[in-house]
Image (cartoon, rainbow, N blue to C red; front, side):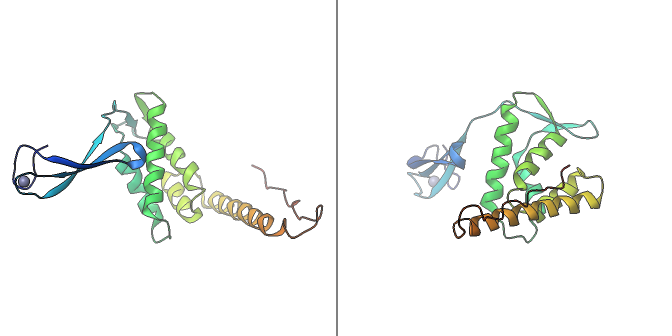
Length: 179
Ligand SMILES: [Zn+2]
């Protein structure tokens, strides 16, 4: 690999390690002439998957776009960027594993939402409303309430079950609104 600083035609690898959850190899290199160091990444060059947009236009799948949508949905919510990066990576893996040359953008939106739902409900709702999966505000509110009730229930069970004698746990609040 050529040195990006002085243009020397070669460089020495100092260190190689897996990156991006094993999807890439990161190498630290040093130029034998100017002795400066730089980093390179080695990745599989994948067969392109085309995303079919709602208006019928097609564009190559781009994980950076998925991440962009997630970062926008995050806003100021306390979600670490790495969490969203690995979510986008998972979606990319799922998309490629479909083994199809074309995937509708709505399907990718669903894959993102399935995962985002478990990460942060506000970000989920922002993302979902962007994707217009819900026809109206009321159904978004219902979804949030459902998520909140589910979380409360899990929280209660976690706290109470070890403290109460068997049979007294209030695990019967299971009457979901049902969809
Ligand atoms: Zn150099």
